[in-house]
Length: 177
Image (cartoon, rainbow, N blue to C red; front, side, top):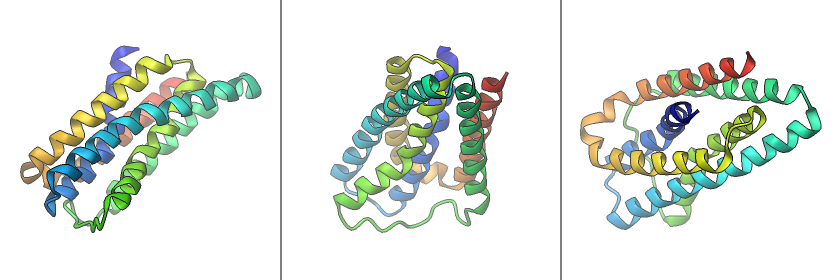
């Protein structure tokens, strides 16, 4: 279970990692970099907890179908991540960030898939709190790391999407059997 959570944490963190690479291309100030990093970490803790709670609740309602639906949610999310990587035209796109509220919106956008992953894991019976802490810590570290390494890694954004999608699909398939 712990190695699966670490791999999933890396997969879920690739969105924030890639967005951080793009944000670094335009030179955010240090306050916005740290604010974004902390918000990503916090939302990667809170949203999976909410998703896992919803997943466990649905298990009581849906019974034996809940694990299959949760696994299917992980597979579909993986396919979407790969699709997004395929349609990405550039690796380091400029993103306009006019204020902190827009930065909060971007943070939520890259963290929302952890809600779906939490739902899938909740239906499969994974430990809630431990997984969420692993997700949040990993997301915060990778987000901050992306800002530091942007000039070296900006050209590999698509490959991160493919990795993340593949991990989600494999975990979903594992959940089906």
